[in-house]
Length: 109
Image 1 (cartoon, rainbow, N blue to C red):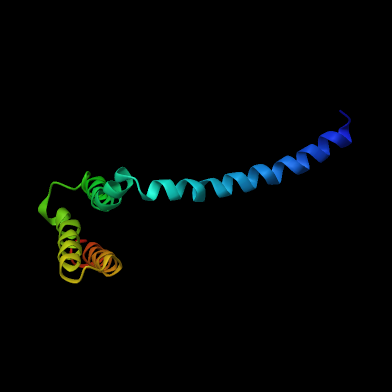
Image 2 (image 1 turned 90 degrees about the horizontal axis):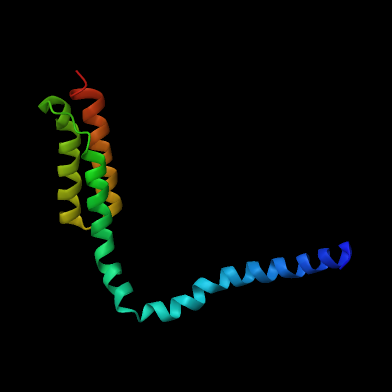
């Protein structure tokens, strides 16, 4: 095949592959929606991801009470606010604000 032929084939194959890769998730989505596994994961994964994030963030928690107060207080505010209001964005923003405020002012000494 000539160089022109290779170029034409490449130009035709590239959009076909791109379109196929973009369409594949939508084609697979229809069969996955009825899956019991996906339904189970959609209900359990958010809590599991949050537990993993909490463990990851608190794994290097300082041993001294004065150094651990800011992250633990922020965690308590985040959990309490989320249980009360059921708003993830509000909980995360408030917990972050409490941690920043405590870590940079009151407990920084």
